Length: 342
Image 1 (cartoon, one colour):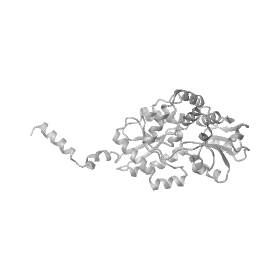
Image 2: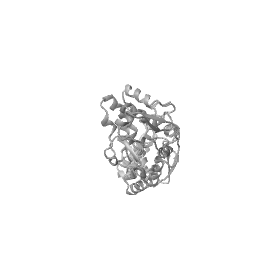
Image 3: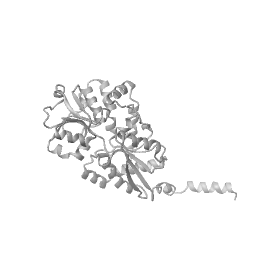
Image 4: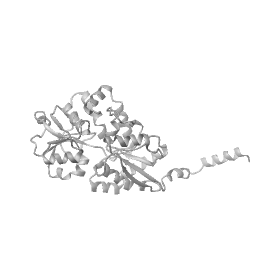
């Protein structure tokens, strides 16, 4: 038998092997390997706590039970990590990322230094959506949007181009309320301390999940009150707190709101770099979604108050990002003016 004939017979035999046997090399890829989970925030915050919980439970949903190590890469509101994942991270399926939900939209907002195309990331899934809140300390004599239109309220933020400042300007624009932004607080925790100490009266973009993870007693003891909520769905735990969308009457304002809350629709997304082989992306997607449904993971998430609600599959995340990047230019111009990215 000549060499060409032998090669043909071997190939033909391979086609008739059981599917599971032929797929074995792919499913065995992670055996004995180490996956690096890059987290775009610093140690100790909500994103970090969630990512470490995922890292503890994800291995059992990957054939070969690889080791997963968490590498924090904070900086520029998540842009540092996103740039790394897009341009420098290995594309072999051994590096994944947990991104802050605003980060994928930084190029859309015109942020300098955001050197990535978010539409090309491989989306792995998200365990939740986020609900944003305009939150006031309980002693502030304001209880409604109508009352906020007649009195200026001091709200904490880090920088003029930060997410809290952007949401403060968004709410002021859409609702006609008077929010005075007080800058200089490094992050949410410092802003919450300022609120508790009476340095400011409110916080413009408290996330329900983060609040329940860090200050659940505030809600239980009614230390804070919520004027409006904004996000893809109403949060059941907020009762009759009105949604911003329900207070709008102009279609362009509604479009602006939808573009602005795209990050909240993503929840807390996990990604793989572009260019990872499709079969490895699929393995990672299946494993991540299985982790989000894992009773042990859910029990840990509940214990740590991580705010897990409804998981979002990879296709949904891709659709959210694609839709945001196809927003009409006039709406994008308004959004960029509100975001004030450098």
